[in-house]
Amino acid sequence: MKVSVVGAGHVGATVAQNVAQLEIANEVVLADIVEGLPQGKGLDLWESAPIKGFDSRLVGTNDYKDTKDSDVVVITAGVPRKPGMSRDDLLNTNFNIVKSVTEEIAKYSPRTIVIVVSNPLDVMAYTVMKVSGFEPNRVVGMAGILDTARYRSFIALEADVSVKDIQAMVLGGHGDNMVPLPHFTTISGIPVTHFISKDKLNAIIERTRKGGGEIVGYLKTGSAYYAPGAAVAQMVEAIAKDSNRILPCSAWLTGQFGIKDTFVGVPVKLGRNGIKEIIELPLTDEESAALKISADHVKVNIDKLTV
Ligand code: APR
Image (cartoon, rainbow, N blue to C red; front, side, top):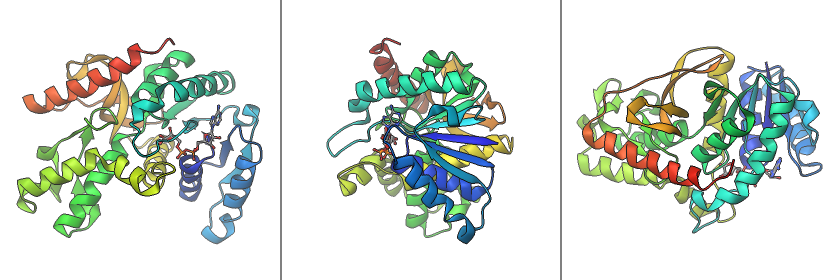
């Protein structure tokens, strides 16, 4: 298994570290346009291998030739948000970057699965699919796992229980109108409302929606990367091990949930060929309407692009 990560910034380097430590790839390539940056980070990460005890070889490069025949490519190239910015404000800048990166990837790794991380996530996933010409199952956006992880982490704090016992799913576009599903949220199978009042849960949902902005507000010069990096690694692992995990990811919809012609976060079965199946859940009318609003928001931005 060969995994390439394009963009050796905060998210990219964290993805490379997590993937290498999981030992699911024999080769991890970190690529970036800035000379020396991927080489330096790649070497530094490789020098951690004897301590952490992993045998995935890490290399950094400015040359896409080194990403040739990757099984999975993760795109993190682009600019992150600064305080006061929405993910949508990154649209034009990141569109041009993601487009040029995709052309290189399609050239050197025509059979790869692509995990898209650059924001605005769902629109960038669309960009990758269009520019590469790849089948929709081979283009998957990372957002739902991160949004769900934020939601689960806040629930764990509020209920004072292990994060391991919290099952949940956050759907929708990766933006402030994402759709957490309280009635699918359980703590070891017990409805979350047994542990947390409705008011407290609503406050957690609100905090989850603004979770990315909360981190940007603290960091001031960029956006989150530890949790996003871990989320991507979980997706790479599901693909590498062909494990059929059911995870919320951004996928191209063709009528599922009554939505078509857009990428949006839904539960998918993830394995060796990327998205094997989109799992259609019975949503309440309110949840369906919220998912539709979220999808329409992504579509408005897709329509602004000339791909
Ligand atoms: N090709 C390759 N790498 C590029 C290109 C390009 N055309 N353009 C920019 N990059 C690289 C930058 O050189 C930088 O190293 O992308 C990297 C981005 O890293 P950071 O600025 O640290 O941003 P990061 O926090 O990693 O976020 C990257 O992920 O979560 C999203 O919104 C976030 O869109 C942003 C992306």
